[in-house]
Image (cartoon, rainbow, N blue to C red; front, top):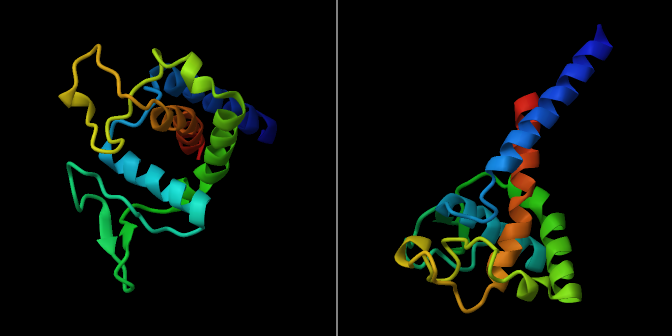
Length: 153
């Protein structure tokens, strides 16, 4: 009986993983996801949860001041913590291979990088710096894995 439950969980996980992978945008389109990513960057760089840069076109969204006056995310920290090793691998890959330059035309644009918001640009326009979008592209592939694990749990 236990083997069939494990087998069903594995089938469910990989089915959900396939569905989520097929529908993954490959970037960050939502403001809350961008805040989670910025916390991940802060954890990877400095080891703290402070959000050092707010969304330029939506100041105050997703952040609240702590007792020390610094801004912190209002979203749970688990996803940011789990994304730190993935971000570090993505940063190392970018440094070692400089792959974003080779795939500059096909990397999806993340809407909330710096002051750039995707809906204010035309379909053929691309930002001058693709590197921040490339990091978000690589890190975004953890979302199908987390989502499929959530389905099983």
